[in-house]
Length: 541
Ligand code: GLC
Image (cartoon, rainbow, N blue to C red; front, side, top):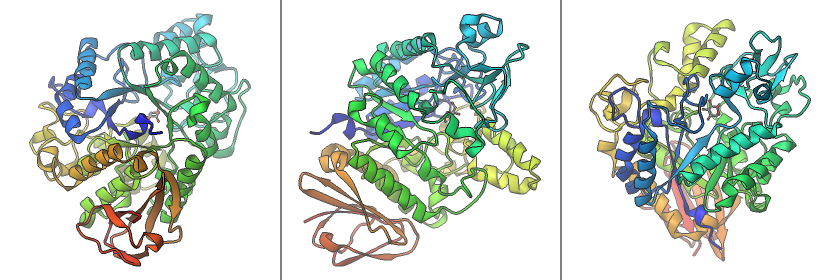
């Protein structure tokens, strides 16, 4: 049976950088309303919005100070309601970002706790002795809790205090948050680092991998997700849910996403975006390891397919440098590479996510100085690199390649000043490429049109939305290939990840027909020669 959710494609908007209508240099909800026709033209079904709740913005809104309000810099609740209503008219729903692992230390819960209220102190994870866990943004993961002599846990910035899900009052308060937005008519939720919410009762030192095994994918995490499901979105089965899973495993993602488990619809994992990390460390520079990328895609593709789990598929998001800069020779093959990367996930099994600007082939901003970067993680790690005696130019090169700001630059609407994003000084400098790459120029261009066709194909063909996943051509040195199977139909998808031609044997697909490609004509035979960055999908004859 075709699952309607599987036909959907999600578009991610980073509200701060999408479109400013008030002239303050920051994007806003009315900017999203203004661009709804654009999103409808592209054909996406759902828009995931990064947090727009009141927040001191220490981590760009992932430090929530009030879960059920709109930060005035983004607009008002009336704007939000109008946005939801108007989007519905275009067949577009919103997926909201729920940051339930931690809240801002400016949240009233933390403030009351600090003021000595024991009820709210039990909302947080307080201990007499810190463990050796390392914060994901650098430094120890514990900070002194006022002058109480205790420490509170913060797996991220010290202004993002982890919430104590063991406390039923905390769970209830967070379930209420989800229900508040559900009542507002949203169509889905993206749960931030949701595989970290379940902490063990006794927290212990863990010298392995910065302490991650001690707090990631704990068994109790699954119990909490089932409770969340039952208390909120589970009551409205049309809602679409995705969990962001930090350093997770296939085994756990099967549990998180198998329908009968009643946890979530699908899971994001990040292993494929660590194939250019030297020794698993982010703040390094290394060309991507193609064999490892293939191994990961095949393992996740096959195991999730066989076990009835569901992957969220993506190359880009607000935390990642642009995939084009990482996986493609953009000097020579930006369009070919962008379309190949798109097909390699949109024709695969799972739900594809498009990050704003990806559909026109946006690239990293190419900043010249550290002064252009604002992200807390980048600034912390620049300092850490210097402390490790890296030369400033080497540290800068690493930040330039790895910074999350690479994704967060203003959406490039046109070639006017500030890329048509704002009339004021933008909160983050636009990328250098905006005069060559922008919507005014590229809507209906090669990349945009290709995305549009891919989105439509998923709606039209159950083979694509439902088919199983099988690895293919596993030993090919430059092609990532997989097969999809559904009710007697079969599709072979070949993706050349390099800027040189390469032959591929077609086996039983030799007599098939070309369904989709980013090159005009391709002659099929016993072998086919793929062009640089060619993607080629062949339906079995
Ligand atoms: C997730 C978000 C990231 C944020 C972090 C802490 O990884 O995607 O942007 O900094 O969680 O909330």
